[in-house]
Amino acid sequence: MQDERLLRSCQAAEADYINMWERLVNIDTGSRYGVGINKVAAIVAEEFRKLGARVQVIPTANPEEGSHVLVTFTGKGKGKVFAMAHMDTVFPEGTVKERPFTIKDGWVRGPGVSDCKGSVNLILFAMKQLKKLNYTDFAQYTFLFNCDEEIGSPNSHLLIQKLAPQHDYTLCCEPGQVGDGVVKYRKGSSNIILEVQGVASHAGSNPEAGRNAIMEIIHQIQEMSRLGDPAKQTTVNFTTIKAGDRTNVIPDYAIAKADMRVMFPEEIDRVEKAAQEIALHHVIADTTVKVTVERSNPPFAENPGTDKLIKVAQELYGELDKKLVVIGAGGASDANWAASAGAIAIDGMGPVKGGKNHTPQECTKLDSVVPRMYLLARMLMVLGHGLE
Image (tube, rainbow, N blue to C red; front, top):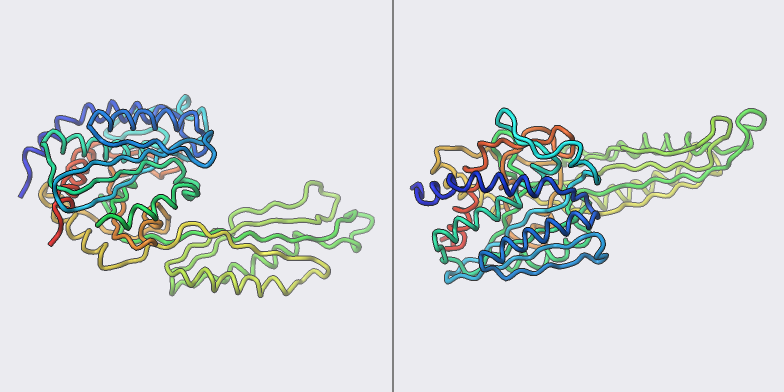
């Protein structure tokens, strides 16, 4: 049954939500840009303090790169819920000046408007509505706003892996997927770094004395690119390469990097072992090949706990006569860290995205704000009360 009081409260809060959204988006917060990140962190911390929360501002290992904000509310019920969204974006300082927050034709645009400041704001406003309703039927709500998600959460993932399992459920508030969707699984991400050391020589007068690092790395890339496995949804895609700086010199060094995505953790070990074996076999004599696998987000695999959360979310969204689409995603998020630590998680709880995130086309559907605010607030209520 629809909670009419909550819906009216969400509808009445839309204008204030938009004003705060604009305020957050119009501050540059590229990862490691602490000047901007700390401004947003201060706003978020102050807003939650106004609601009576316990707030901790936690500097990163290098304080100049920003801070995380950890928010805790204590109620009178039995359910513990953890929710999170990130304050950092992929955009450099100065992007806001070039294309600030705008609304046109029902779409909201600006750097990080979807990924993920709309969601930072959504958690704040969902909680504002629950405070207005004096809702206390929960044991604890814990909200984390981290500042390094876009670079793999190198500092905050330890905090996520510690906190998430201490709660009954985790709501990762990455943007809602195109088509009004939530996310039931995400692939894990790693990087393969391939380096070749050759021998330089003059390309015109003495090429035979050289050992061409470019030719060797091309061979290695072709072989390692075959390590993907469609049956297991493992992908290996080389995306960058650097070699040589003069056309008349045989290059003595080349480096290439590949993006690896996996659904199963053991696939990382398989690909790494196979890549090391490939690196032993050269087509250019006297070259040296080195392969390194940098492991980042672990997989967030399909599981019964997430399926249960999705069913709850679908039922609650149905109170508005709306339907949630359910998808899996190749991109990783902080839900990966939570799930890998044993937490029951659902992702994609934020406002619905439109254009491609991480690009100037990033945008959010304005008319998704109120329904998604209602959904998040209802999820907090139901999960805070405790599922049967």
